[in-house]
Amino acid sequence: MAKCAIVNARLIDGTGEEPKDGWGLVIDGASIQTVEPVGSLRVPADAQVIDAAGLTLMPGLIDPHTHLSYHVSTYALNMREMTETLETNTIKATENARTILETGCTAIGDGACRGNIAVAIRDAVSQGLIPGPKVVAAGQMMCGSGGVVDHTYTWGYQENPAFFGTVVNSPQEVRTAVRKQMRQGVDMVKVSASGLPGDPYMDGRTQDLSFEELEAAVKEAAKFGKRVHAHAHDAEGLKAAVRAGVISLHSGEYVDDEGLELMKERGCVFVPTISWLHFRVSEEYAREFTRAFKLSDQEIKWFVDECRDAYETCREAIVKAFRVGAPTAVGSDGAHVFPPYDVVLEMEYFQELGIPPLQIINAATQVAAQAIGRRDIWGTLEPGKAADILVVDGDPSKNVSVLRDKSNIVMMFQDGRVVKDIRSQAAVNPNSS
Ligand SMILES: [Zn+2]
Image (cartoon, rainbow, N blue to C red):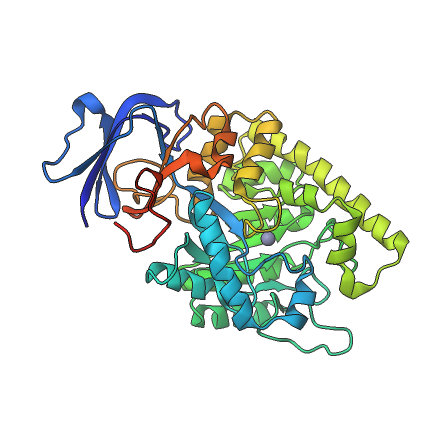
């Protein structure tokens, strides 16, 4: 692959360090070779040189908590499972992949999907068949009977590989499920440590899988060199997951002080879902999300109240996590297509809570990479890291909302390839260079 130097830029390296003016970097193939002040940057004679004066360089965003198989036909997963084939859902997921890339994400973690859609999208992107972020893919989420993604129907009890979740009820069943997913090519395992705020079967303050089951997942995945991520809301399920050795927690708003200390001590990343929790505080959402359950008006009111409580608790949890130094990443819990939430909106929610923009960028790059086990290769602009780079018109270290307008991302590199270049009017194309 070609060499390329980007010079004269303001550099945000993703580590949380202050921006540096008049810096540049050299890309050699898929990796960053050097990052230096322009005065000392050695530009190879055969490198293409891009003058980025007045522009900002930053790492590509990483959304460690997406679901490529989500889309807007309904918010109720189990209704979609009854009405849409895996094949149709996969085609819609390709559109999601493109949208996520356009948001500025060069990589994502897919935290569970119907069937094996995330693995298929991962492979299609890496083979250049479709544009999209690099994907660290999970398969179906594992939960206990009656848990958050137990979508077996009360009239049938039939497990189905096209469901979003799979049911496991003992450490041995966990081990079997992990092994089957390894056979299908997943990069990570997603487990449920808690119920869900408003869920009529298991609410957000209830632990789902036991410590023994969570630990079985971690140990079995480790045999294959893979890591485990947990859906977690309640304090006890969350702590059980951290003690079992998961590397990130999706949601987690009911975390207590002990939980935050545990995360800090073990480097387990807190990935809140504040914009999604806020989005759920509406009767319209509640009625659609629970359509299959036919809830009474009183139950709908309870759902909305539970969601409001979770959202307000999440606001406090995020501020506290940054204050105590628990590793915290930004993740959307969406496919960037549920209006109106995506990873940039999540960054804006953090900013509204008073988290400094530079720390938010760190949470959406380096710490996000840590959340999906890729901190050593992705997430910062440092020598040896993947050349996943955004060239931005504006300074996101002053206000992350600069990224809201996609036209401010004037260039985008993914593994050293140009996948967006507004200056040359090139559309997003995985095969351009
Ligand atoms: Zn999720």
